[in-house]
Image (cartoon, rainbow over all chains, first blue to last red; front, top):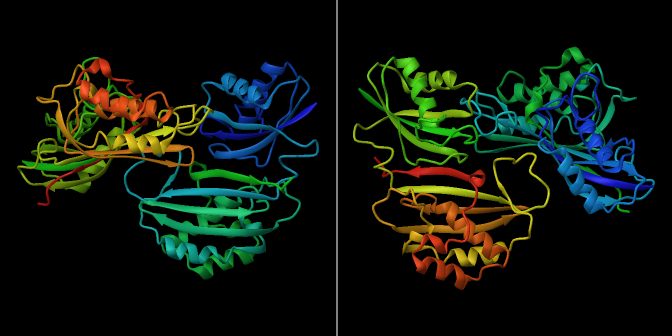
Length: 248
Length: 248
């Protein structure tokens, strides 16, 4: 048995999300079926993050165990050939330690959220950004974002379906910057609650348009109540950027 | 009669190109029909560049004449509403001088060509970059590109369907740079021959993979013969970036 670590890029639009679902296509299922077609083995893929429907990944880390001898290079090429024409690509495959676990060994996760702050519809970024037509103050958003950095009870920013044991998480970084019409929000933490990034972005958007002050954001955090949430940003703008692991 | 200057973004994938075609959808036709639906006037759109099938635009400039009184703001919003769900967006509309002509007043055109230099298929950049799996030497490509800068007879880099009167053009800039896996080629000139950018990129790719030397590229240019062309790069990676006009 060999454990392979895979780095995966995908466009989330055609999928119900990362995780296998009874009622629709998932990235996990697509890759598992590709591996099975090559190895003729029943396999289960584990990932650093289980992204929602419509959420993308620049470099998701996953692992899979394979009995049949195969090189990482041939495995990656084989999966990619089977995945065609789905917008999922194995960027790299490597042999991992037997105790490596894409989800449980992960010590850091990074997300990027893109807001296209313009009036015109998105022709080139359709499905890849959240379009907000009213002008947003990115500096005010960045300032408010710093209130969320650190160790907090993020119940306000947690989906009702969240399976995490505790709502207390440490947010390492939440940085907002404007590049022309695009506002990029970078988030980093050991782990996130379900919908946490989209919930935080939704509230920051309210700050950006002047509907919420910093104090409103602080009050929402302190309320520890989902009902205090301003808004859940749509999945389109969210990208899983990277999973971090201890050096071997 | 009011002349409107439009700035247009589009994803070229669903279109036969900018220009109206008898046998398939075009960006020009899509926008003309949107304007006609709003104004009930027969209109003709003129553009700075007539991009080929599959070529994209970040900001194409076009103009159109409208009899009915309408503000630029309402015209842009109206066209965008009619264009839905096509991947074409009017980024801005403004009233232009009566003698402004998107094509004939244009004094500079800028293109960007994106090569994704990696083995894995493109999940997020499918249709938006040319994937080249063998490693390319971007510095060698940039050095060779400088041979093409300046005033030359570009017959070698001209499509058989090119309608330009002369194959002599002045290329102002051709710059190649690598950003991670992506190689970006920026081209600027007053005007380009049909297929010129894709033809130049195709030859630079041969230089990048070591199949051609600088001398081979020079010989191809000097041959002034389409048969000396190395390769025509696919449309996927090509973006019309901007059209320049004299200050009013």
